[in-house]
Image (cartoon, rainbow, N blue to C red; front, top):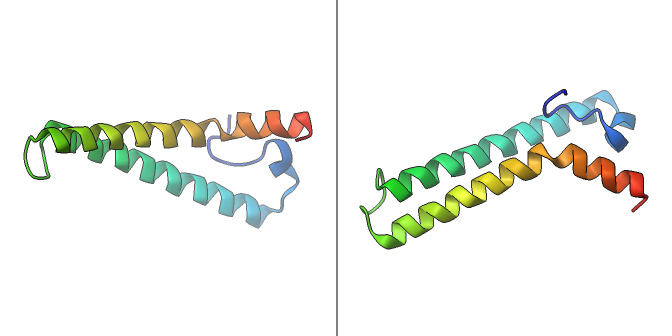
Length: 89
């Protein structure tokens, strides 16, 4: 496994610069997703925001779920792309 380095499936045919740019983009998106997850934990626990209101806790849970979805999608992007590319879609 090469992490976020896009050398699988259709990305294997891209040039070196395009692979580096896609790798950097994936790393930035992973960082943003992780930041959203951590911010969601902070809001749901009442560490920052307007206190421990149910609205802040609900918004924090939404941030946590959104961050986890972003992390899952970027982490499984290679599998999803390879399956779609293999199906000829």
